[in-house]
Length: 477
Image 1 (spheres, rainbow, N blue to C red):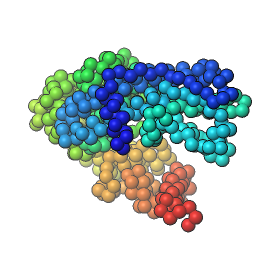
Image 2: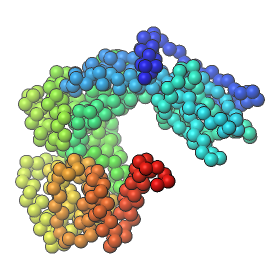
Image 3: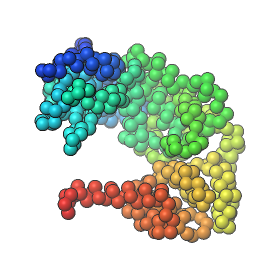
Protein backbone atom coordinates (compact mmCIF):
# COMPACT_ATOMS: atom_id res chain seq x y z
CA UNK A 1 0.00 0.00 0.00
CA UNK A 2 2.79 2.43 0.88
CA UNK A 3 4.42 1.64 -2.44
CA UNK A 4 1.19 2.46 -4.27
CA UNK A 5 0.72 5.72 -2.37
CA UNK A 6 4.30 6.70 -3.15
CA UNK A 7 3.67 6.08 -6.82
CA UNK A 8 0.49 8.16 -6.67
CA UNK A 9 2.30 11.07 -5.05
CA UNK A 10 5.09 10.76 -7.60
CA UNK A 11 2.59 10.92 -10.44
CA UNK A 12 0.69 13.87 -9.03
CA UNK A 13 3.89 15.85 -8.53
CA UNK A 14 5.25 15.09 -11.98
CA UNK A 15 4.99 17.91 -14.50
CA UNK A 16 4.56 15.81 -17.62
CA UNK A 17 4.81 12.23 -18.74
CA UNK A 18 5.55 11.02 -22.24
CA UNK A 19 4.51 7.51 -23.25
CA UNK A 20 5.70 5.70 -26.38
CA UNK A 21 5.80 1.93 -26.54
CA UNK A 22 9.06 0.02 -26.78
CA UNK A 23 9.14 -3.56 -28.08
CA UNK A 24 11.73 -6.17 -27.09
CA UNK A 25 11.79 -9.90 -27.84
CA UNK A 26 13.34 -13.09 -26.53
CA UNK A 27 16.09 -14.56 -28.67
CA UNK A 28 14.63 -16.00 -31.87
CA UNK A 29 11.39 -13.99 -31.68
CA UNK A 30 12.77 -10.71 -33.05
CA UNK A 31 11.27 -11.47 -36.48
CA UNK A 32 7.76 -11.20 -35.02
CA UNK A 33 8.12 -7.61 -33.81
CA UNK A 34 6.70 -6.28 -37.07
CA UNK A 35 3.72 -8.63 -36.75
CA UNK A 36 2.98 -7.33 -33.26
CA UNK A 37 3.37 -3.73 -34.43
CA UNK A 38 0.83 -4.37 -37.17
CA UNK A 39 -1.73 -6.47 -35.28
CA UNK A 40 -1.52 -5.32 -31.65
CA UNK A 41 0.04 -1.87 -31.54
CA UNK A 42 -2.75 0.08 -33.32
CA UNK A 43 -4.99 -0.77 -30.36
CA UNK A 44 -2.15 -0.04 -27.92
CA UNK A 45 -1.86 3.43 -29.44
CA UNK A 46 -5.59 4.05 -29.05
CA UNK A 47 -5.55 2.99 -25.39
CA UNK A 48 -2.43 5.06 -24.66
CA UNK A 49 -4.00 8.17 -26.24
CA UNK A 50 -7.15 7.72 -24.13
CA UNK A 51 -5.26 7.00 -20.92
CA UNK A 52 -2.95 9.99 -21.34
CA UNK A 53 -6.00 12.28 -21.32
CA UNK A 54 -7.45 10.39 -18.35
CA UNK A 55 -4.13 10.69 -16.52
CA UNK A 56 -4.04 14.45 -17.08
CA UNK A 57 -7.63 14.85 -15.89
CA UNK A 58 -7.15 12.98 -12.63
CA UNK A 59 -4.10 15.04 -11.74
CA UNK A 60 -6.78 17.53 -10.63
CA UNK A 61 -8.22 14.97 -8.22
CA UNK A 62 -8.02 17.15 -5.09
CA UNK A 63 -9.69 20.12 -6.73
CA UNK A 64 -12.42 17.92 -8.25
CA UNK A 65 -12.98 15.97 -5.03
CA UNK A 66 -13.46 19.18 -3.03
CA UNK A 67 -15.96 20.59 -5.52
CA UNK A 68 -17.83 17.30 -5.87
CA UNK A 69 -18.17 16.93 -2.09
CA UNK A 70 -19.56 20.48 -1.91
CA UNK A 71 -22.10 19.99 -4.71
CA UNK A 72 -23.33 16.77 -3.09
CA UNK A 73 -23.47 18.31 0.38
CA UNK A 74 -21.04 15.75 1.80
CA UNK A 75 -17.82 17.51 2.74
CA UNK A 76 -17.23 14.76 5.28
CA UNK A 77 -16.70 12.37 2.34
CA UNK A 78 -14.12 14.52 0.54
CA UNK A 79 -11.15 12.35 1.52
CA UNK A 80 -12.99 9.20 0.42
CA UNK A 81 -13.83 10.79 -2.95
CA UNK A 82 -10.24 11.97 -3.35
CA UNK A 83 -8.93 8.47 -2.62
CA UNK A 84 -11.30 7.05 -5.21
CA UNK A 85 -9.98 9.47 -7.81
CA UNK A 86 -6.38 8.65 -6.86
CA UNK A 87 -7.20 5.01 -7.52
CA UNK A 88 -8.06 5.84 -11.13
CA UNK A 89 -5.03 8.09 -11.44
CA UNK A 90 -2.84 5.17 -10.47
CA UNK A 91 -4.89 2.87 -12.69
CA UNK A 92 -4.01 4.97 -15.74
CA UNK A 93 -0.40 5.13 -14.60
CA UNK A 94 -0.13 1.33 -14.51
CA UNK A 95 -1.79 0.94 -17.91
CA UNK A 96 0.49 3.52 -19.51
CA UNK A 97 3.61 2.12 -17.87
CA UNK A 98 2.70 -1.41 -18.92
CA UNK A 99 1.90 -0.53 -22.53
CA UNK A 100 5.12 1.44 -22.76
CA UNK A 101 7.09 -1.81 -22.50
CA UNK A 102 6.03 -4.68 -24.79
CA UNK A 103 7.86 -7.99 -24.55
CA UNK A 104 7.58 -10.94 -26.91
CA UNK A 105 7.81 -14.24 -25.00
CA UNK A 106 7.83 -17.86 -26.15
CA UNK A 107 4.54 -19.55 -25.27
CA UNK A 108 6.30 -22.90 -24.73
CA UNK A 109 8.77 -21.38 -22.27
CA UNK A 110 6.05 -19.45 -20.49
CA UNK A 111 4.09 -22.62 -19.83
CA UNK A 112 7.02 -24.09 -17.91
CA UNK A 113 7.24 -21.04 -15.65
CA UNK A 114 3.76 -19.50 -15.61
CA UNK A 115 4.40 -16.35 -13.62
CA UNK A 116 3.24 -13.55 -15.86
CA UNK A 117 1.36 -11.29 -13.47
CA UNK A 118 2.83 -7.99 -14.53
CA UNK A 119 0.29 -5.20 -14.23
CA UNK A 120 -2.28 -4.77 -16.98
CA UNK A 121 -2.36 -8.06 -18.85
CA UNK A 122 -1.61 -11.38 -17.17
CA UNK A 123 -1.95 -15.00 -18.22
CA UNK A 124 -3.68 -17.75 -16.29
CA UNK A 125 -2.41 -21.15 -17.42
CA UNK A 126 -5.01 -23.92 -17.16
CA UNK A 127 -4.28 -27.48 -18.27
CA UNK A 128 -3.04 -27.14 -21.87
CA UNK A 129 -4.60 -23.74 -22.44
CA UNK A 130 -4.29 -20.18 -21.23
CA UNK A 131 -6.74 -17.49 -20.18
CA UNK A 132 -6.22 -13.74 -20.19
CA UNK A 133 -6.66 -11.57 -17.11
CA UNK A 134 -7.02 -7.82 -17.62
CA UNK A 135 -6.76 -5.74 -14.47
CA UNK A 136 -4.33 -2.89 -14.02
CA UNK A 137 -4.67 -2.97 -10.24
CA UNK A 138 -3.73 -6.61 -9.56
CA UNK A 139 0.02 -6.11 -9.38
CA UNK A 140 1.96 -4.63 -6.49
CA UNK A 141 5.25 -4.76 -8.35
CA UNK A 142 7.47 -1.81 -9.15
CA UNK A 143 7.17 0.25 -12.31
CA UNK A 144 10.25 -1.30 -13.90
CA UNK A 145 8.57 -4.73 -13.75
CA UNK A 146 5.39 -3.61 -15.53
CA UNK A 147 5.27 -4.76 -19.14
CA UNK A 148 2.84 -6.08 -21.74
CA UNK A 149 3.67 -9.76 -22.37
CA UNK A 150 2.80 -11.06 -25.83
CA UNK A 151 3.07 -14.84 -26.23
CA UNK A 152 4.28 -16.27 -29.54
CA UNK A 153 3.62 -19.95 -30.22
CA UNK A 154 5.76 -22.38 -32.24
CA UNK A 155 3.93 -21.45 -35.45
CA UNK A 156 4.70 -17.79 -34.99
CA UNK A 157 1.13 -16.85 -34.10
CA UNK A 158 0.21 -14.40 -31.37
CA UNK A 159 -1.52 -16.43 -28.66
CA UNK A 160 -5.07 -15.16 -27.98
CA UNK A 161 -4.52 -12.29 -30.42
CA UNK A 162 -8.20 -11.39 -30.87
CA UNK A 163 -8.82 -11.56 -27.11
CA UNK A 164 -5.80 -9.33 -26.46
CA UNK A 165 -7.00 -6.69 -28.92
CA UNK A 166 -10.55 -6.80 -27.56
CA UNK A 167 -9.37 -6.76 -23.96
CA UNK A 168 -7.02 -3.84 -24.50
CA UNK A 169 -9.82 -1.77 -26.01
CA UNK A 170 -12.51 -2.82 -23.55
CA UNK A 171 -10.61 -2.70 -20.26
CA UNK A 172 -7.98 -0.13 -21.18
CA UNK A 173 -10.48 2.12 -22.87
CA UNK A 174 -10.29 4.15 -26.03
CA UNK A 175 -11.49 7.56 -27.14
CA UNK A 176 -11.03 11.08 -25.84
CA UNK A 177 -13.84 10.71 -23.28
CA UNK A 178 -12.31 7.76 -21.39
CA UNK A 179 -11.30 9.91 -18.40
CA UNK A 180 -14.54 11.90 -18.42
CA UNK A 181 -16.62 8.72 -18.37
CA UNK A 182 -14.51 7.34 -15.52
CA UNK A 183 -15.21 10.55 -13.59
CA UNK A 184 -18.90 10.13 -14.45
CA UNK A 185 -18.74 6.63 -12.96
CA UNK A 186 -17.18 7.95 -9.75
CA UNK A 187 -19.92 10.57 -9.43
CA UNK A 188 -22.60 7.96 -10.12
CA UNK A 189 -21.27 5.49 -7.56
CA UNK A 190 -20.93 8.18 -4.91
CA UNK A 191 -24.48 9.41 -5.43
CA UNK A 192 -26.14 6.00 -5.57
CA UNK A 193 -24.01 3.75 -3.38
CA UNK A 194 -22.32 6.03 -0.86
CA UNK A 195 -24.93 8.74 -0.34
CA UNK A 196 -27.90 6.46 -1.05
CA UNK A 197 -29.44 9.06 -3.35
CA UNK A 198 -31.03 6.42 -5.51
CA UNK A 199 -34.66 6.43 -6.57
CA UNK A 200 -35.73 3.44 -8.70
CA UNK A 201 -38.90 5.28 -9.74
CA UNK A 202 -37.33 8.74 -9.98
CA UNK A 203 -34.38 7.84 -12.14
CA UNK A 204 -34.45 11.24 -13.85
CA UNK A 205 -32.89 12.83 -10.79
CA UNK A 206 -29.87 10.55 -10.50
CA UNK A 207 -29.32 10.42 -14.27
CA UNK A 208 -29.45 14.19 -14.52
CA UNK A 209 -27.39 14.80 -11.38
CA UNK A 210 -24.70 12.32 -12.49
CA UNK A 211 -24.30 14.20 -15.74
CA UNK A 212 -24.49 17.73 -14.39
CA UNK A 213 -21.98 17.30 -11.57
CA UNK A 214 -19.52 15.57 -13.90
CA UNK A 215 -19.94 18.40 -16.40
CA UNK A 216 -19.40 21.03 -13.70
CA UNK A 217 -16.19 19.30 -12.58
CA UNK A 218 -14.85 19.05 -16.13
CA UNK A 219 -15.49 22.74 -16.76
CA UNK A 220 -14.02 23.72 -13.39
CA UNK A 221 -10.64 22.17 -14.28
CA UNK A 222 -10.91 23.45 -17.89
CA UNK A 223 -10.85 19.94 -19.33
CA UNK A 224 -10.48 19.97 -23.13
CA UNK A 225 -13.20 17.28 -23.38
CA UNK A 226 -15.83 19.18 -21.36
CA UNK A 227 -17.76 20.38 -24.41
CA UNK A 228 -17.71 16.95 -26.05
CA UNK A 229 -18.99 15.41 -22.81
CA UNK A 230 -21.89 17.88 -22.77
CA UNK A 231 -22.72 17.01 -26.38
CA UNK A 232 -22.84 13.33 -25.47
CA UNK A 233 -25.79 13.98 -23.12
CA UNK A 234 -27.50 16.73 -25.10
CA UNK A 235 -30.97 16.15 -26.58
CA UNK A 236 -30.58 14.91 -30.15
CA UNK A 237 -32.92 15.45 -33.10
CA UNK A 238 -33.92 11.79 -32.84
CA UNK A 239 -34.86 12.29 -29.19
CA UNK A 240 -36.84 15.44 -29.99
CA UNK A 241 -39.10 13.30 -32.17
CA UNK A 242 -39.83 11.10 -29.13
CA UNK A 243 -40.56 13.99 -26.73
CA UNK A 244 -44.29 13.14 -26.50
CA UNK A 245 -43.40 9.58 -25.38
CA UNK A 246 -40.92 10.63 -22.68
CA UNK A 247 -42.26 10.06 -19.16
CA UNK A 248 -39.79 11.01 -16.45
CA UNK A 249 -42.45 10.50 -13.77
CA UNK A 250 -42.22 6.74 -14.40
CA UNK A 251 -38.60 6.11 -15.36
CA UNK A 252 -37.44 3.01 -13.47
CA UNK A 253 -33.89 1.72 -13.23
CA UNK A 254 -34.12 -1.45 -15.30
CA UNK A 255 -32.00 -3.07 -17.97
CA UNK A 256 -34.09 -5.95 -19.26
CA UNK A 257 -32.85 -5.50 -22.80
CA UNK A 258 -34.14 -8.91 -23.84
CA UNK A 259 -37.66 -7.56 -23.68
CA UNK A 260 -39.09 -7.57 -27.20
CA UNK A 261 -40.43 -4.02 -27.09
CA UNK A 262 -37.43 -2.52 -25.29
CA UNK A 263 -36.81 0.80 -27.02
CA UNK A 264 -33.17 1.89 -26.91
CA UNK A 265 -34.01 5.18 -28.61
CA UNK A 266 -36.65 6.04 -26.02
CA UNK A 267 -34.25 5.05 -23.22
CA UNK A 268 -31.67 7.47 -24.66
CA UNK A 269 -34.28 10.20 -25.02
CA UNK A 270 -35.37 9.88 -21.40
CA UNK A 271 -31.75 10.07 -20.19
CA UNK A 272 -31.11 13.14 -22.35
CA UNK A 273 -34.26 14.89 -21.14
CA UNK A 274 -33.34 14.01 -17.55
CA UNK A 275 -30.04 15.84 -18.08
CA UNK A 276 -31.86 18.76 -19.69
CA UNK A 277 -34.20 19.00 -16.70
CA UNK A 278 -31.38 19.01 -14.15
CA UNK A 279 -29.55 21.58 -16.30
CA UNK A 280 -32.64 23.78 -16.01
CA UNK A 281 -32.76 23.14 -12.27
CA UNK A 282 -29.13 24.23 -11.90
CA UNK A 283 -29.80 27.43 -13.85
CA UNK A 284 -32.47 28.28 -11.26
CA UNK A 285 -30.80 27.28 -7.98
CA UNK A 286 -27.08 27.31 -8.84
CA UNK A 287 -24.13 25.78 -7.03
CA UNK A 288 -25.33 26.58 -3.50
CA UNK A 289 -28.80 25.28 -4.33
CA UNK A 290 -27.36 21.95 -5.43
CA UNK A 291 -25.54 21.70 -2.13
CA UNK A 292 -28.69 22.45 -0.10
CA UNK A 293 -30.87 20.05 -2.09
CA UNK A 294 -28.45 17.11 -2.08
CA UNK A 295 -27.68 17.67 1.60
CA UNK A 296 -31.35 17.05 2.35
CA UNK A 297 -31.71 14.14 -0.05
CA UNK A 298 -28.63 12.08 0.89
CA UNK A 299 -29.14 8.95 2.99
CA UNK A 300 -32.90 9.11 2.22
CA UNK A 301 -33.52 6.03 0.11
CA UNK A 302 -36.58 5.50 -2.08
CA UNK A 303 -37.97 9.02 -2.05
CA UNK A 304 -40.85 9.64 -4.44
CA UNK A 305 -41.06 12.38 -7.06
CA UNK A 306 -43.38 14.25 -4.72
CA UNK A 307 -40.80 14.04 -1.93
CA UNK A 308 -37.99 15.36 -4.14
CA UNK A 309 -40.14 18.23 -5.39
CA UNK A 310 -41.31 19.10 -1.88
CA UNK A 311 -37.73 19.21 -0.55
CA UNK A 312 -36.63 21.30 -3.56
CA UNK A 313 -39.36 23.81 -2.74
CA UNK A 314 -38.43 23.90 0.95
CA UNK A 315 -34.65 24.25 0.64
CA UNK A 316 -34.24 26.03 -2.71
CA UNK A 317 -37.62 27.71 -3.24
CA UNK A 318 -38.03 26.26 -6.72
CA UNK A 319 -41.18 24.71 -8.21
CA UNK A 320 -39.49 21.55 -9.44
CA UNK A 321 -42.79 19.72 -9.91
CA UNK A 322 -44.00 22.13 -12.59
CA UNK A 323 -40.64 21.72 -14.32
CA UNK A 324 -40.92 17.94 -14.14
CA UNK A 325 -44.46 17.99 -15.56
CA UNK A 326 -43.03 19.38 -18.81
CA UNK A 327 -41.51 15.92 -19.37
CA UNK A 328 -44.62 13.84 -18.70
CA UNK A 329 -47.33 12.81 -21.21
CA UNK A 330 -50.68 14.51 -20.69
CA UNK A 331 -52.40 11.18 -20.05
CA UNK A 332 -50.08 10.56 -17.11
CA UNK A 333 -50.21 14.14 -15.83
CA UNK A 334 -54.01 13.94 -15.62
CA UNK A 335 -53.75 10.96 -13.26
CA UNK A 336 -51.18 12.49 -10.92
CA UNK A 337 -52.66 13.69 -7.60
CA UNK A 338 -55.75 11.48 -8.07
CA UNK A 339 -56.82 8.64 -5.78
CA UNK A 340 -55.14 5.70 -7.50
CA UNK A 341 -56.32 3.32 -4.76
CA UNK A 342 -59.66 3.26 -6.56
CA UNK A 343 -57.94 1.88 -9.65
CA UNK A 344 -55.89 -0.63 -7.67
CA UNK A 345 -58.95 -1.91 -5.76
CA UNK A 346 -60.83 -2.29 -9.03
CA UNK A 347 -57.95 -4.36 -10.41
CA UNK A 348 -57.82 -6.51 -7.26
CA UNK A 349 -61.56 -7.23 -7.59
CA UNK A 350 -60.97 -8.37 -11.16
CA UNK A 351 -58.11 -10.61 -10.04
CA UNK A 352 -60.34 -12.15 -7.37
CA UNK A 353 -62.60 -13.22 -10.24
CA UNK A 354 -59.58 -14.57 -12.15
CA UNK A 355 -59.98 -11.79 -14.75
CA UNK A 356 -56.25 -11.22 -14.99
CA UNK A 357 -56.20 -9.89 -18.54
CA UNK A 358 -58.78 -7.24 -17.69
CA UNK A 359 -56.87 -6.26 -14.55
CA UNK A 360 -53.62 -5.52 -16.44
CA UNK A 361 -54.56 -2.14 -18.03
CA UNK A 362 -56.17 -0.99 -14.77
CA UNK A 363 -53.00 -1.76 -12.76
CA UNK A 364 -50.77 -0.20 -15.42
CA UNK A 365 -52.88 2.96 -15.41
CA UNK A 366 -52.62 3.27 -11.63
CA UNK A 367 -48.88 2.62 -11.67
CA UNK A 368 -48.43 5.35 -14.27
CA UNK A 369 -49.62 7.89 -11.71
CA UNK A 370 -48.22 6.21 -8.62
CA UNK A 371 -45.32 3.93 -9.60
CA UNK A 372 -44.17 3.33 -6.01
CA UNK A 373 -46.87 0.83 -4.99
CA UNK A 374 -44.83 -2.38 -4.89
CA UNK A 375 -47.80 -4.62 -4.20
CA UNK A 376 -49.64 -3.27 -7.21
CA UNK A 377 -46.56 -3.94 -9.32
CA UNK A 378 -46.17 -7.48 -7.97
CA UNK A 379 -49.83 -8.14 -8.72
CA UNK A 380 -49.25 -6.85 -12.25
CA UNK A 381 -46.44 -9.40 -12.47
CA UNK A 382 -48.91 -12.06 -11.30
CA UNK A 383 -51.37 -11.09 -14.03
CA UNK A 384 -48.73 -11.30 -16.73
CA UNK A 385 -47.57 -14.69 -15.48
CA UNK A 386 -51.13 -16.01 -15.65
CA UNK A 387 -51.02 -14.99 -19.32
CA UNK A 388 -47.70 -16.88 -19.68
CA UNK A 389 -45.96 -13.58 -20.45
CA UNK A 390 -42.84 -14.36 -18.41
CA UNK A 391 -40.82 -11.40 -19.73
CA UNK A 392 -43.31 -8.74 -18.60
CA UNK A 393 -43.94 -10.69 -15.39
CA UNK A 394 -40.24 -10.70 -14.53
CA UNK A 395 -39.86 -7.05 -15.52
CA UNK A 396 -42.38 -5.93 -12.91
CA UNK A 397 -41.06 -8.31 -10.26
CA UNK A 398 -37.55 -6.99 -10.93
CA UNK A 399 -38.65 -3.36 -10.60
CA UNK A 400 -40.45 -4.07 -7.34
CA UNK A 401 -37.52 -6.01 -5.89
CA UNK A 402 -35.11 -3.27 -6.96
CA UNK A 403 -37.13 -0.69 -5.06
CA UNK A 404 -37.27 -2.17 -1.62
CA UNK A 405 -35.13 -3.45 1.21
CA UNK A 406 -35.49 -7.20 1.98
CA UNK A 407 -37.83 -7.91 4.86
CA UNK A 408 -39.35 -4.43 5.05
CA UNK A 409 -42.27 -4.78 2.65
CA UNK A 410 -45.44 -6.72 3.40
CA UNK A 411 -46.46 -8.67 0.32
CA UNK A 412 -50.09 -9.20 -0.65
CA UNK A 413 -50.73 -11.02 -3.93
CA UNK A 414 -54.37 -11.06 -5.06
CA UNK A 415 -56.27 -13.72 -6.95
CA UNK A 416 -56.55 -17.49 -6.76
CA UNK A 417 -53.96 -19.09 -4.48
CA UNK A 418 -51.88 -21.53 -6.55
CA UNK A 419 -48.30 -22.11 -7.55
CA UNK A 420 -48.25 -18.76 -9.39
CA UNK A 421 -48.23 -17.07 -5.99
CA UNK A 422 -45.10 -18.99 -5.01
CA UNK A 423 -43.42 -18.01 -8.28
CA UNK A 424 -44.18 -14.30 -7.91
CA UNK A 425 -43.19 -14.05 -4.26
CA UNK A 426 -40.25 -16.47 -4.69
CA UNK A 427 -38.77 -14.42 -7.52
CA UNK A 428 -39.36 -11.25 -5.54
CA UNK A 429 -37.47 -12.67 -2.56
CA UNK A 430 -34.64 -13.86 -4.81
CA UNK A 431 -34.21 -10.52 -6.56
CA UNK A 432 -34.44 -8.55 -3.32
CA UNK A 433 -31.78 -10.70 -1.66
CA UNK A 434 -33.83 -13.04 0.56
CA UNK A 435 -32.36 -16.13 -1.08
CA UNK A 436 -33.35 -18.70 1.55
CA UNK A 437 -37.04 -17.75 1.41
CA UNK A 438 -36.86 -17.65 -2.39
CA UNK A 439 -35.51 -21.20 -2.59
CA UNK A 440 -38.25 -22.54 -0.31
CA UNK A 441 -41.08 -20.99 -2.32
CA UNK A 442 -39.68 -21.68 -5.80
CA UNK A 443 -38.97 -25.31 -4.92
CA UNK A 444 -42.66 -25.76 -4.11
CA UNK A 445 -43.66 -23.98 -7.32
CA UNK A 446 -41.30 -26.08 -9.44
CA UNK A 447 -42.96 -29.30 -8.29
CA UNK A 448 -46.06 -28.24 -10.25
CA UNK A 449 -44.73 -25.70 -12.74
CA UNK A 450 -41.63 -27.10 -14.46
CA UNK A 451 -40.75 -23.71 -15.96
CA UNK A 452 -37.20 -23.25 -17.18
CA UNK A 453 -37.00 -19.77 -15.66
CA UNK A 454 -37.73 -21.21 -12.19
CA UNK A 455 -35.16 -23.96 -12.67
CA UNK A 456 -32.49 -21.41 -13.64
CA UNK A 457 -32.98 -19.52 -10.37
CA UNK A 458 -32.91 -22.72 -8.30
CA UNK A 459 -29.73 -23.80 -10.08
CA UNK A 460 -28.10 -20.41 -9.39
CA UNK A 461 -28.93 -20.68 -5.70
CA UNK A 462 -27.56 -24.24 -5.55
CA UNK A 463 -24.35 -23.17 -7.29
CA UNK A 464 -23.92 -20.20 -4.94
CA UNK A 465 -24.43 -22.49 -1.93
CA UNK A 466 -21.87 -24.97 -3.25
CA UNK A 467 -19.29 -22.23 -3.79
CA UNK A 468 -19.91 -20.92 -0.30
CA UNK A 469 -19.60 -24.42 1.16
CA UNK A 470 -16.36 -25.07 -0.74
CA UNK A 471 -14.92 -21.77 0.43
CA UNK A 472 -15.75 -22.53 4.06
CA UNK A 473 -15.02 -26.23 4.32
CA UNK A 474 -12.80 -27.14 1.38
CA UNK A 475 -13.49 -28.87 -1.91
CA UNK A 476 -13.21 -32.41 -0.54
CA UNK A 477 -15.82 -32.17 2.21
